[in-house]
Length: 230
Image (cartoon, rainbow, N blue to C red; front, side):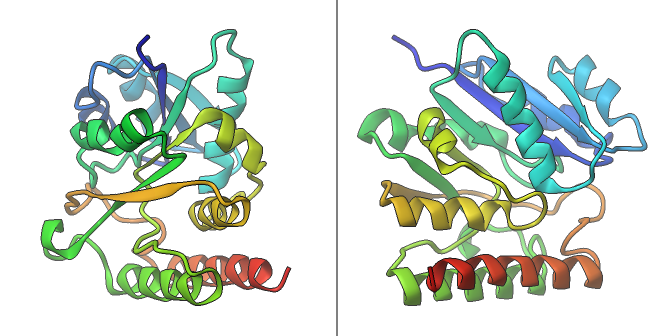
């Protein structure tokens, strides 16, 4: 029996990119859910026109948008087997979703992270704060938990039932690292799949500003230290 796959895309002012993302998502996805995170442009209408289910979350924050998407999924009569998270800025290659979900379907892995490896990354696609932050966070997870993560990449897939069991709570930039830390704590299986990564359309709301980069860094480190001493 085919797996039911839902994609959740948090999006803040991504009217120029969101249709490209939606149109390149493989046909084996049952539903694409775009959460317009207090967007002030035409993100919602463009996403709807491209065929996505559109939700609106007025509270700004990556985690708020992801939780809104999960709340919607939980209300559906037919639940998915796999949830995929994907950014709306067109920096990822949506067609690689097939590779991201393969370890879940073929090897029964619980969580798969799309790792933005240097050899597959367009020059300049990741800023220095992103590269350094990923290195620091994954190095600390290796030190404290013997983890094998190399990235906090937003392009990721997880079994829906295991994701629910994580009881995710982070409302902002700590969403990705919270997920990975809780997977480590629960001893769920995980792996990484190398993915291509290109320069996003528009300016990043996190790494594109000093304030955003600092806030994200502090949030990520706070999650790691919280879990390291509990």
